[in-house]
Length: 301
Image (cartoon, rainbow, N blue to C red):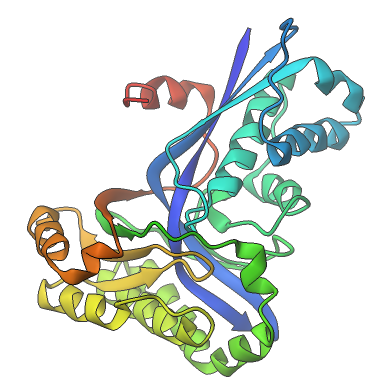
C-alpha cells in the first residue's frame, strides 16, 4: 500500500529580516508541489533524499516508535520545484515526507508541530502552516499569525544561478547587515500585517518591495530596481524576492494580464539572466492530505 504527502513550494518571502534581535520571515505558497510516496516492504528500498529520510525518522521518534522500522520503507520524491533558487524545495520535500509518514502511521500533527520537526533538520519556511505568519526559520516559533490573501498570482523570474541558504547565513557580518535593515523590516512587517488583514494587495506589495530592496546589502538581485519599475508601469502590486535565493516575484491580481507582462520581460535584456519567466497562483500553505493529492495529481508530472 502506498501513502502520500504533498507540500507546496514558495516564491521566496513576502518579508524577511530581524525583529527584536531575532530573524523572522513570512513566506507564501504557490501551486508547485513536492510529492512524497512511501511504500513498505519492497524488495528494493528507495532511500530518497537524506533530509527526507531523516524527516521520516523524526516522526517515528515523535511517537515513540523504533526508528529501525523505517529501514523497510521505500521513499520516493517527485517534485516540480526548482532546487537552489529560494523556492523551499527542501522544506517541501521534508514536509511532504512528514505528511506521508503520518498517513502511514495513521497519526496527525498540527502545522506547528510539523514545523518543529522540520526545523530540526534545517532552517525552514512558514509554508508548512495553514496560514500566513511571522515565523522564525531557525526555531519555528511564531511571533504572530497574519491574515490570508485571495485572488493573487505571481510572475516568477527564475535565473539559472543557484544559492545555498546555509551559505548566505554564513556570510561574514550577516547579522550586522540584517540589523542595519531592522527599521525598514519592522515597517515592512507592519504593512504586511495590515495588508493581509485587509486583503489589500497594494499594502502587501509595498511590504515586499521594501523588504526586497533592504536585502540588497546582503545579496544583490540583478535588475531588481528595473523589475520594480516595470511592475509599477504595468500596475502590479509590488516585487518580492527570495531573500536567501535567486528568484524574484511580481505580485498581481489573478485577473490581471500576466501574458503581456511576461512577453515584455522576455524581450528585455534581463531575460538573458532570468531565463525562465512564468506565472504561478498564490495558494494556501500547509502539507496536503492524500484526498487532496487525488485532485492535484491531475497535473502533468
